[in-house]
Image 1 (spheres, rainbow, N blue to C red):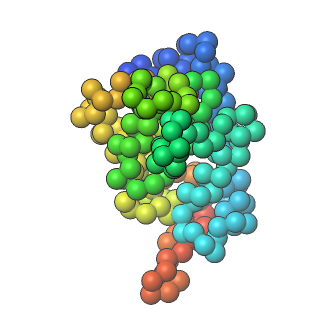
Image 2: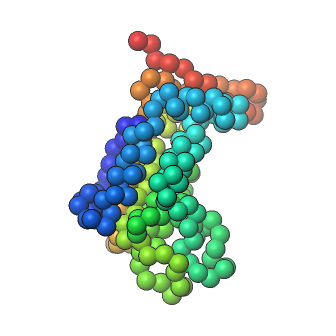
Length: 207
C-alpha cells in the first residue's frame, strides 16, 4: 500500500537514522508495502465480505500477521499493576523500544492513541512493564476512509495531524503518523442490506 507520513518531534529522523530503531522501522515499511490490492480483495472476500462494510479488519489482520511474523509483540500492557492490565492500557504492538498503534477506530480515540506512546516512554507513578522511546500510529487517510467503506466518524490521518499542535506539550516523545492511502484499483461501494444494516462490495475502477 501507498502511505503518507507525518513526523512529530523528529520521529521520522529518529527511526531512519538511529541504529536502535532502523531495522524495526524497515519492518513496518515492508509490512505496508507488501500489502497489494489483490491481497486485500482476496482476504476481504474470504473473511469479511458478509460481515463488514469496510476493509478495516482486513487491513488490521494483514498488518498484524506480518508484524507477528517479524516478532513484534502484540497486546503489550504498559503497566505492571493488575488493575491496569486491560485493553485501555495496552499497546497494540511493540519492538525495540518502538510502540505501534493501528488506529482505525473512532475519532474520539485519537488523543488516547497519541498519548499511549508517551505513557510507555515517560516515567510514571505506576510501575511499567515496557520502556518505549518512539511511537508509530497507523491510520487511514480521508481518501481511504471514503473509498474503503469506513465509517465517517473514524480518526483519519488528517485528524491525527491536527491533534499534534494543541497536544504538543503533552506529546513529549518522537512520533510518526502513517496514513494509508486508498487502493489503486478498487473501492468499496456501501449499500443497504436491510433497513438497519449496511454492507460493502468491491467495485473496480474503469480503465
